Amino acid sequence: MSNLKICTRCVMDETVPDIFFDKNGVCNLCTAAIKKINDEVFTGDIGRQKLENLADQIKASTNKKYNCIIGVSGGVDSSYVAYLVKDLGLNPLAVHLDNGWNTDTSVKNIKKILDKLEIDLYTHVIDWEEFRELQLSFLKSSIANAEIPTDQAITAILYKLASKFGVKYIINGGNVNSESIMPESWMEDNLDTRLIKSIHKKFSKKPLKTYPMMGYLKLAYYILIKKIKYVGILNFVDFDKEAAIKFLENEFDWTPYKEKHFESIFTRWFQSFYLLKKFNIDKRKAHFSSLIVSGFMKRDSALIELERDYLDEETMHQDEEFIKEKFQLSHNEYGSIIGSDRQSVDNFSSYQPILKKFKGFREFFKSIATARNK
Image (cartoon, rainbow, N blue to C red; front, side):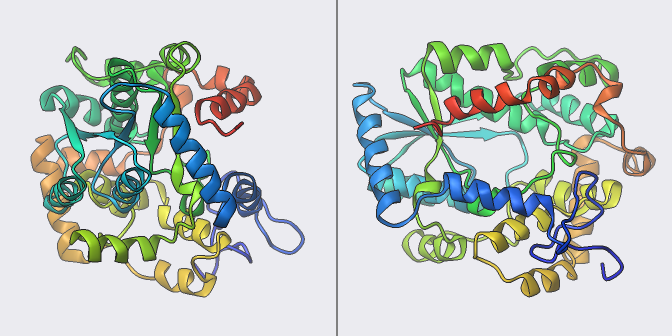
């Protein structure tokens, strides 16, 4: 790492294709993140007032049994959201996607939180054989974002259930303080159904009969016609992740994870091994940099953490063996996936050319969807 050019304010470096530095060595990514934080994060009395106003709007939006939907994974962000919505007097339906990769810890954390808060849970259990083929197709495609199949399914299920139950608000755990930085060159768009179908058609003959999928037109219908909002309420509170972890541990006997999103075995392998080994992408850099610019982590501490391995060798080996077994991959097949060169989405059919051309409209549309224009 010492030979790389690293941002003087955060820990993003020149391995990121779309990074550039100003005369002081500060990168464009954290400069944009600071603007995003200033525009979208509201703390103290202002944040509390926005939160209470939002709660009033949600309560007035429907007279159904549930007045909002929350996604739960067992991670810190979604667990804290569950606490917050109940503290605001809302009556949520918790939704969880069981894609076959849950850790025992995540399952226990979900139960502890929802049982104590008396929140109903809807679990969508995905067809594993079908989903296995889709995930394998993405691994064989050699594009970086092998999490698209999971992220697409979660989003589709949340909107579908919101529409089914007459709910106008989906409350999510996304927050700018810890997620303001993520290079576009690292992760392809997870709503690109044309890309999903193109990759799956090339690498699998198994049809997608039950897989939850939602494209941009369906999303537009949910947002513009059904008037469903997708809101990250953690941007309206003084959200300190470490403090939130301690609170969840004390109040709910909740168990923390070593890194962000490690509640999933696949995601743990994807971030700690697959992205690093195959693409030289260390997502901790983006996560730590987000925390640095939001004031929750020191740059020196981040640099020290990045020198350490994501996981210990034993856990890494166990995850690799589990991945091979669950995907039914031979040692050579697994090695071929890891060793193949990265491919561009340009090698597949996708909506990316259109999305790039209408990027400004896309951002405006997103602001409506997330109620950021309020």
